[in-house]
Length: 427
Picture 1 (cartoon, rainbow, N blue to C red):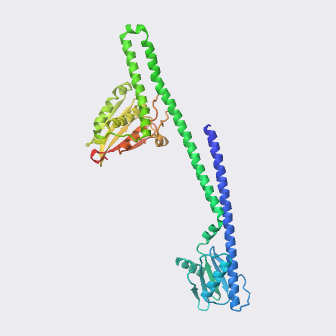
Picture 2: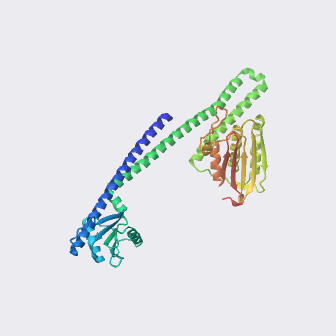
């Protein structure tokens, strides 16, 4: 399945899921509004009945036009012609709310126009700070100070309505879980697709890397099998050297693959000891002299660290520097020019390896330490490798309790900066 097909499938799937989720939210909102409307209607009916009960108690036959007014979403006022005892009002409200299935916490107030005062009833399951809300709302929304009225405040009205929704909330949660699992599935598919492509590239690179020395060895052995070759000792020696070099190259490639396989299976046990990092650098640089001469390149060293001792495995430290220098030569623009410097900083040492290579974009820098990842080189196909060198470097630096940073720009080279704790501060 190609990339375009996968993108179309993912787009259609996302469009469908978003559509379903949008409809769910739409109907949940409709259900919430309907429940709120029903709640408000029950409150209006209950408060109206309380007003009528108060009138009966006071033998008041006067008609009251629209006795209930909703001030805010959860605060209501009811008008009466006469005053009444707050505890009587409280009992009337509790009984009427139970009859209308409104058995929720509430706070009530009672305004007396004769002395222009507000009388609070008993605490009815409402936190005290809510009373300030009731007072503030009442003072700003009173009908008239020549009338009696009482107010009712439901502090948790929205929670009551949400609780009433029940099945809608459950279905929304399940739908949300489906969306999350769907997103995770898409992510896994994309990761598997990426891993498959990386694995395919690795196999192609490995096949090419292993096939080249094998072909060279095969051709050299055919030449050596010619009886006349013994008459030309120089030519015989030359082909023998070619076989030895290609065999060594083949061995190195196989060792790299086996090394990475070992890293994947378990954490490598390092044989740590006191190591002079300057000696490691000198030794590694010496091993590249022939390659640098062939490429007319050079390595400039500035080993200024006064305390070059760290605790580490000399073999793996050598491999770290080898991979960085090897990459610097492979990706060089023109003749390779490499700068290696050291300096002490606080409780450790910094090692910088700078090259004049093709550099990397920000996106490439995000993936450069991933296994099998190789920086694209455009139309160039002469850069050898499996894409495991920098991944190995990253892992080994971490196992030495160090840190590695990369700074790079396209066509401006790259700088790798490695920090290792000094010997006395090493773990």
